[in-house]
Length: 97
Image (tube, rainbow, N blue to C red; front, side, top):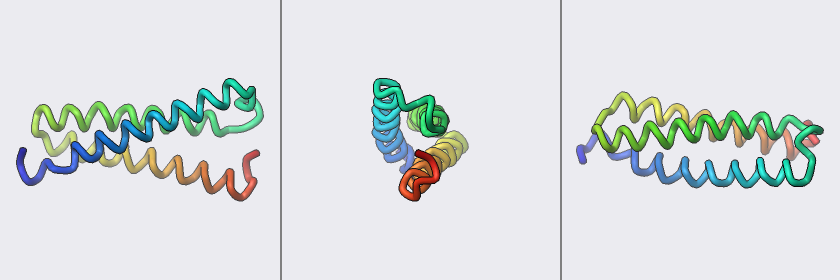
């Protein structure tokens, strides 16, 4: 593995863990029938899409040793993190119930 392609394993590990957390949150909302009352499930669904794209692209970056794919995976990961942070802030300050 080259020096410039050393972030992809970390992105893959972190995004797959956060993807699992998003699935747990989404499933919990559906089981508790809360998803109709809030926008948390929509935001979580977008975060799932971003983390899944990040997982896929970081894996492809490892396989192909491609820095451009790694960069896109990194941006998708940061977007997913940003959405989770936004959801946490909105939930903490009771902006969304």
